[in-house]
Image (cartoon, rainbow, N blue to C red; front, side):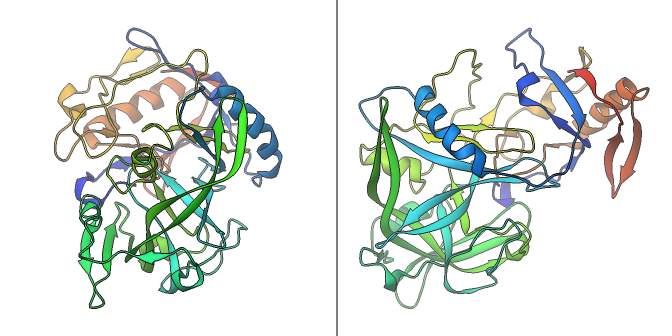
Length: 370
C-alpha cells in the first residue's frame, strides 16, 4: 500500500467472479490477455495443504546462484470476501518469535507490533495467533539511536522522528488512511536459504525493522489483522536491500500470487526460473514499482482512453502494489472500462451497482477476452 501522498483519488470496479490464473495468458506487444471468469464460491481458505507441495515446487523453480535464495511461505488470497491480502511469517529475535506480516510491494520497511502498542489488535479473524515484539526479551536486540548513521536511511521511507530517549522513530501513513508509528530496532531474522537444490534451515542475519507502538485506521480492525507489514520497496531499509548489502541474497525478489480459494503463492528473495514468463520493464527512478501501462482493451477492442492518463508523473502512474486488494483506475479510464464490460457481458450477466461499486451477477461460467 503506497503512502497517501502519491495516491490519486480512484474509483474501482468489483466483478463478483473469480479470475482463474491457469486460464490467464499474458502477452507482450500485439498480444492479448485472455481471462476466464466464473462465479466465486465463498468457502474458507485452507492453507495447510499447500505448504509441503509448495516447498518442493519452490526448489524446482529457483535459480542456482552463488548467493542464497530466501524462501517464504505465502498464505492468504486475493478474494476480498475471504481474506483479501497475502501474508507470510517472519522469525525475529533470540529466542526467535514468529510474526505474521502482510506482503506489501508498495512500502519499504518491515515492521511488527511492539509490546504496549496503542490500537494494535490482539486477535485476528484470519485464525492466526497475534504476537508482540519485546526488545527486552531478545538477547540480540538493540535499539537504533537518532545519532546512528543508519537512522538516516529511515527518512527515505517515512516521516522520521526522534524521541526524548534518543530513539530513531518513524511514522507511516498509508493510502487507505491507516497509519503506524514506533521506533527502529535491530535484531536477527531467521529464514530458509536455498542454494541449488539444497535447503539449509536456521540461517539468520541482522536486520533493522520497525517496532510499532501505535496503529490507526484499518490497521486496528480485527477481521484481517496481522502482526505487521513486510515492505518490499526499493529503499535502504527494505529487507531485500539489507540482505543484499550483506551478500546473503541477490537484490531481486519474486512474488507469484496463486488465485482461487486456495490462495497462497511464492515469495523468494531471488529469481524464479519458469518457462513462458513474460516480462515488462519498470519505470526507472520512481519510488514505487511503476509500469508503463499503454492501453486497455475489452473484447479485443482498445478503449478510447487518452494515453496521457497512463503517463507516470509525480502523482499519476500505474503501481504494482501487493498490499492493495482491488485494482483501481482513474476516472478517465474507469468510465469507458466499465461501459465496455457492461456492453460485452450484458447478455450473460445482470449489471448492478452495490454501495457505489459496479458489480455483475452471473449464474454460469463464461469467457471474456480483454
